[in-house]
Length: 87
Image (cartoon, rainbow, N blue to C red):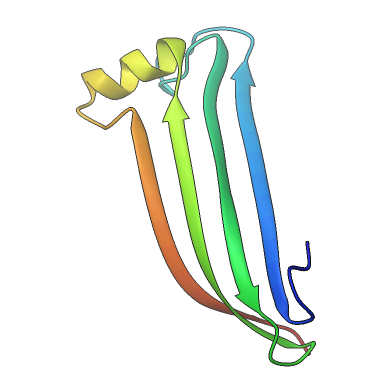
C-alpha cells in the first residue's frame, strides 16, 4: 500500500492450524499460531528499500499449553530493521 510516492506500508497475516495434537512437535489441534505485522519502507530507488517492521505472534489452545510447559512466552512482539534490495 503506497502512503506517498516513496513510503510503502505492507501488512502481513499468517495462521497455523493442525488437525491433531502432536507432542513431539509441540502443536495442539486447531488454531495453533496467529501472527501478523506491518512493514514500513522508504523506496530510495525501485531496487533499494530500507524498512522498519513490527510483528506480533500468539499461540492458542494446546500449542499455548506446550509453550507454557517449555517455559516459552505465549505471545511475542518483534521489531526489526532491514534493507530490501533486488537487481
